Image (cartoon, rainbow, N blue to C red; front, side, top):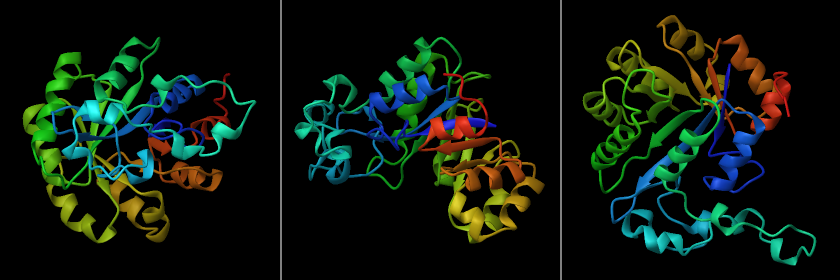
Length: 260
């Protein structure tokens, strides 16, 4: 079972920062997960929310700001708001706390000493619509990650967005995310036979037959967000092939794979 760090090791670190991803790599994960949005000047950045109130304490909207504007913000202070009062806390490397571009994340993965897979979620709806997927595929080509055997897979709740990626880069693996079980009867008829399916953990719990139905159709399951031993046990029973977790160190330890 593949262990994938959800927005990095985000239980203990500010999500989507380079610091969170470095911590996940050091823990021994198999993969990293990120969300991407497009800035006003065309850069893909790893940010979940459309606005910056939660993670950067700013009223700005990602799609209306240039990368230079985002670089002025601290994306980590919200996680530990009392850090300035802790005299014993180690000095922080500010480069680990700023907005993270997808290019920087992929460079970090490319330079790592073992294969790391990357699950990239494109967020919709967005003012830029299909431009997000086009820019994403262009970047994957820069790294050679649009070819067979690529460590990258693209995820979305939007079937249309995944169709775009399939047209632009047919060799990239696709994951149809699913949080509403009532959508599965329609989706199972239209998604590709080799597409993966990414149901939410809570959705699987509340709909016990759903996991078996997905597996019966022959689709691998990548489940989010798996943070407890009970969550992990359910995924093992369902034959899930990848778990996406905020707590990669804990999940690796539970699986007996903590080699640190």
